[in-house]
Length: 182
Length: 401
Image (cartoon, rainbow over all chains, first blue to last red):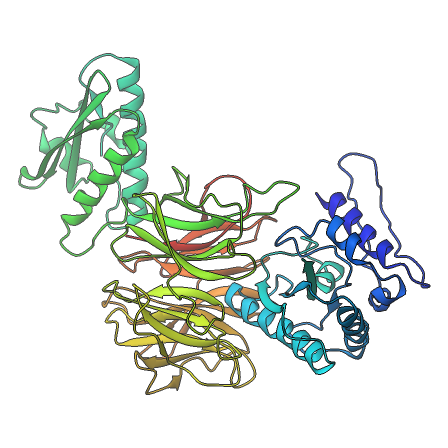
């Protein structure tokens, strides 16, 4: 399972292309029973926006955006500080590129999913995820992205991308994900 | 409490008797009302004559109450006769005959446990109650799901309720024990409150309706089962709302720029406890069921969330989740004295408390062993026991009738 997630994550990042160093994968990849750990992409790799390698409409149609997976897609996740829904400068940078992409790809449905790490209570994180999704939504709208087709939803801590309980996993899980569908 | 005696030498019956005895002992020990005379002392007295017990023998080893059970089997039908005596007087306190299918002797034991507990005339037993919870055990590599389950109060007989392979969370028993309100994401990325009539196999929804849009979380019932409170975001951030069970008479109860979440009713239905971050950190507040007379309850610690009001009017207290030294623990605050007592303690976290219907025990979920599991403790926090409800992570318990 963990390995599958890692692969998905890498695929997602690879699809974004970019000129920065690729994320480093450490740990074993083959031997059974050993811990396969994907080091979280350092936060700065996230800023490789999809504008570098925009995915056209037909590619979107071919890409699977599984419902409620909270992973994959043409738009990179943005990340948040612990217990915060404030957009970091880095997140704003990503959202600015996302906004440009969204304005160039109209007619799509984009759900902004707010996610949290698993520290803190279920209900609190559902509210925090809601705030995160809204913060991203509001910023996109302020950048001129049409509201039509753009929605928000909170998943709280219910759908982590990395189920581990360490700083790297938590940082990955504190995110807004952009689920794109037709 | 001597072992159940089979009326005939039949392996199925012997096994049923063994299970019955074991479950009955566990049930009564769980209630914590009776002390058990150690079985090792039974050998010091002559064997029990089930038709005519010698009470002097039982008195000599310190017994006050003697429970005699005999079982018989006819086809697939199990019968258990139970008698409870006051050892001092020899008076029969209870004489009952239980008949049913032989495939689940546990239910016989649960029934008798509740009947014996009722002899105290003070406590209503919980042996026949059930706990709803959320499990990810049905997830596949392709699709991560959370489904609602119910299990007996001791974790046995887990049964799946939802089958929609989506995210189904935050179950809340309707007070009649026939239905669960819960939040489902099954309408694509739009979490709303649904109602599962679990024994009729019907799912109706969604209670919070399309009116005004928005998403809904954390349903909780009024004690009379007529109204629900929940947190919803239709007005831009999480606020507390109440609504009739049929979706009519929607009311907004809070109005703050911060998140208001996790509401629950008091046992009288007159008041509501909820979590608000309006002072910057989550704290528990109380208000009346119209949203008036707002006051802050918790003042110690920087994270107090998920209130659960003890349903017994005998105990005026609220369980909640507190951040303590980096982890999360279940605690209880006494409403009169504002004294807080910590229920759980240790590595990892425990959260999401729910009370047994009689207010004498709590269930919650803990990740002490790497995965999240439903655990149970008494209201003083003694003996925290994880329930073996099955594989996967099992969280968000709601203890029903």
